[in-house]
Amino acid sequence: MAEQQALHPMICARCDQELKYVGTKKFHEGSRGWGFWLGDLGELFTHREHFDIYVCPRCGRVELFVDGIGEEFRAH
Image (cartoon, rainbow, N blue to C red; front, top):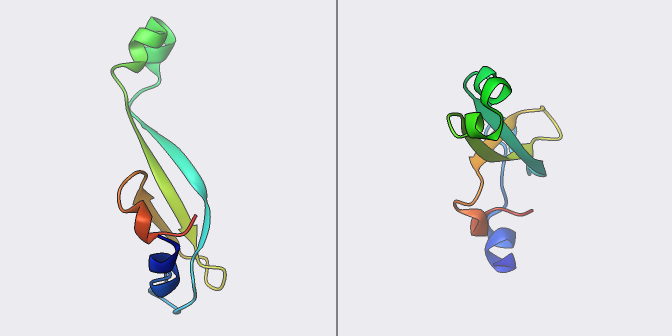
């Protein structure tokens, strides 16, 4: 796995610098009202997705990748 990452680093499409992994972010889609009124049951009606975030240290470009898919090709 480390060999694949070394051979194929994540590169910025804008300025050809290596992207840096900065963490995973959880995005919440839908109204937060359901959770307020129905508690944990209301959270079943919302959609959440986790994304791995990579940032270019030179230009600031941000790339998001779905957490859990293709991770063997990305350095963490």
